[in-house]
Image 1 (cartoon, rainbow, N blue to C red):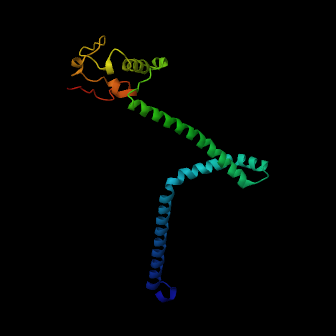
Image 2: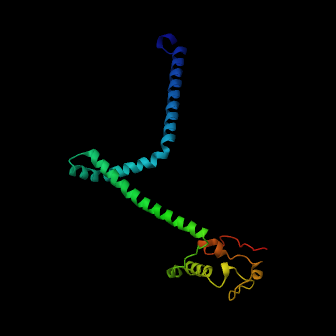
Image 3: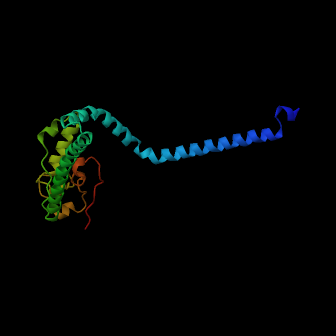
Length: 193
């Protein structure tokens, strides 16, 4: 009976071998798909933006191509060059200005002429209590009557402090914190002989 209907140990082993071969192929395909995804994962966002820009700029590309005689390649080149100029020119101007500002800052630090700019009056009008508080701290940091904004023993800022007055006093935080406005950005430093 086994030999006549074609079922038996030989056929079951063939089915098992075919099933095992199919599972191995499926596992290899899954592993290959996972590796492909791992390689392309960092570029998925870029590819999505490229697709969005291609769809959004297609009408402009077709309009430019019509105006220059139907030359699609030249129209694409013009769009890329104009886009690059719109990105590169402002960026280069910004970087040149930043370089000039850094050079000026380094020169001021080397020559010991660095000064904090006076706070703008509209800073005091910022909402809630932030503006007024920040304005007061910046004004205090720029005050003439306290050298380096060092606080005396009793907080007396009406006279110039001597070295004896300042020896054990902490440096005011607003001097060290800069734009933090003295809001506990840095702990006070103590001057010791």
